[in-house]
Length: 398
Image 1 (cartoon, one colour):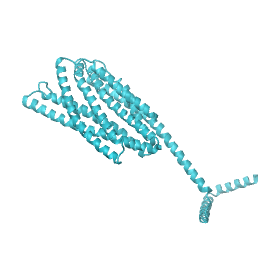
Image 2 (cartoon, helix red, strand yellow):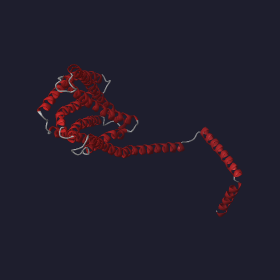
Image 3 (cartoon, helix red, strand yellow):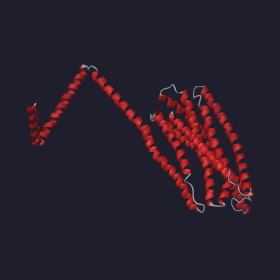
Image 4 (cartoon, one colour):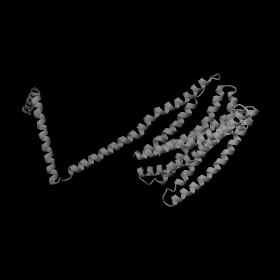
């Protein structure tokens, strides 16, 4: 249970860092009037799309909630299942919305920064991308923390093994809600993106002879809207589902392996440590103002690799610390159980048949031992003679 405090700290750290990155990007200049005009059109189109899409998804989740609630009242599902399904879908959609809101806000600011230097463009783009990344992680850990705390209190009276099994089984449901939301966001956004992209190319390049992504082509706005709703909002919902699903599946594996609470705590602690090390890694993504594209890629790799190395270093001792102790404890319990069984067997009275079997077994072992000794004496007569003399001397001394 103490691990949940650390997980909650990791969640809040991710969300606060994402908020600080959002505020940092928002303070930057938006560029000239043409940049502002195009960026505003793209942002309004993306908001209109998400508003319409989320209305349709809301109907689906309402119907599923009623169905799951009916199954819960029938005793086929837990009462927490429909609510967990809703929270999973809500946080998944929220991750996509925040990511898209940040992207449409940062587009013109990144273009303005890149017009001065590649380093400024990298800073704004990387900061904006960090917002969605840390939002996904922060909301995922927050959802896990809330549900684990609630379910642990509800099932607190049960034995540890049964309690953690009930907690894990109920938490798997909000992973289903996140998956449902990601399905609509990713597939729907992808279809819109491709339709707008092909339409813009047909009208602009084929019919009018206008270069691709030229602002004189009105369909380019729809194309850019599709990029944001499909590759940003859809990706955010998809990342949330993948992130939460990987943690919940590890929960299920830990319970199936009989690792108990400590087995469930391992993925949560690793995820929280990943937040801390990722924040550290962001401060190493920096270059000079006159940097070229190759240097920028090296800077990105440096921050990413540093975070990965740090989490890899801490992961091994953490797993050994949590699961190694449990394994040793389990081994001692088995040894104690085995010794108790042996002691019970030794103190229990033997039946005549059991006594006869033991005597026969001892006789057979005695005969085998005599054959081995005789064979050794025949093969090594000198060594056997010295051993006999040594035994005789010991007998005389006594």
